[in-house]
Figure 1 (cartoon, rainbow, N blue to C red):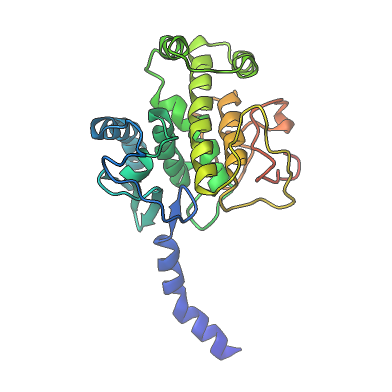
Figure 2 (tube, rainbow, N blue to C red; figure 1 turned 90 degrees about the vertical axis):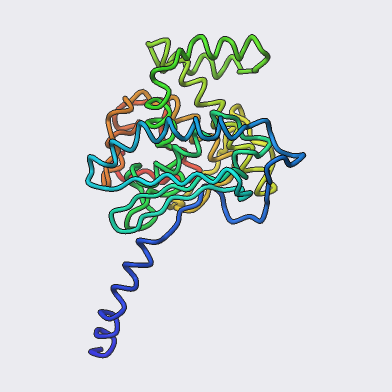
Length: 289
């Protein structure tokens, strides 16, 4: 027993270091590559790529700095990797954004912004967490629409923007429009709700394609119910549901999530919310929540 204890103490620094360097990836490991100019790429440009990330940086760098940490947003437009990553190294908080994912045929400009929000969620999304520092995948998705999207799009004329997209042919079901209307009294927040739901759907389609799953839809949510919280990557439909429910949650974006208490900052049945809760296809609510 003494030998085991001594060995455990010797390896503690290594364990801590490994956890600190642990990378959380937006999508499960995949070998897909999309190079600049690939025939299967969307119409994302490097200028758009940089502009989207500059906005996320502008909003979140001061928040991270105020926490006494250093924020590093690594932009790799030429990298063909179809993924994104979050990492912590000591006091340095890192997100890595790759051009390969930005160029995926299903990823819209808003969808790519939502990926950056997801990666910020690993750092700031609170409980439930998958490791000593990182919010798990589902919670990072939930953070993306409940907190991050509302923050980074708050200054846009979202009503005019979404109307222009609808006029140009974007199809949003009446059910989604009604749900966003019922969840918000403010016209801008209603429009952000629609914008977030559509961005989340683009990512759900991307993730489903990468996982060779059926195409997700907002109108056909995953009805499965987990018995324990899934800290890994839920399937594309389940993640689509989480983005959508996060968009519907009426809790303000500046009510931050807590590192331990999952009810703080979230929509819950215990607070009489009818929509906007974390999706049960990945989340097991805490007792009394």
